[in-house]
Length: 170
Image 1 (cartoon, rainbow, N blue to C red):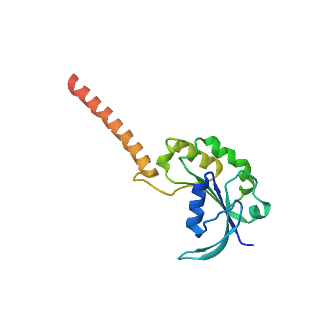
Image 2: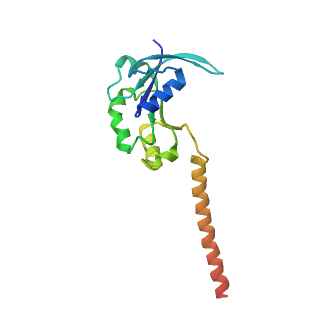
Image 3: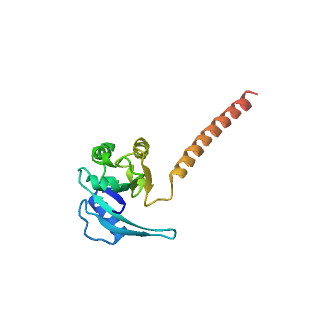
C-alpha cells in the first residue's frame, strides 16, 4: 500500500480548503483515503491523503503507513492551547511519523485567540514544525530583529542619559 499523509483539521472548512487545494477533491469524508500524486521538479510520488476532523483513533493500517502528520489550525477557531492538547491522545498512534507539521493560516491572527509563544512552545514540546501559510510583512526573524533593535535602543538611551549626567556634573 502507498504511504499516507494524515491531515487533521481542527476546523472542517480549513481542512476542506487544504485537501481541495492539493487534490482538487470537493467531497471529503473523514478518514477516507484519497489518492494523490505529488509531482515536483525533483520527484514524483504516489501517496494517500487521510483527512481527519473528528476525535477518534486513526486506524492501525493507516497509522502504520503514515509518514507525515499535518495538524491544521485556524486561529479564528482555536481558542486555547488546551484545544491543541485535547487532540494529542487521538494522534498518539502517529507519534512515530517522520514529519509532523502544525500548519496555521497566519500567525498574526493567532494573537487574539492563542499567543504565538504558546503555539511555538507547543510545537517544541511535541516535536512539530510550524508552517505559516499566509505570512504578513513581519516574519519570525523580523520579530526577533525588532526585539533586538528595541533592546539596542533602550541601551543607547541609557548611554545617552549617562553621558548627559557627566556633562551636567563637570
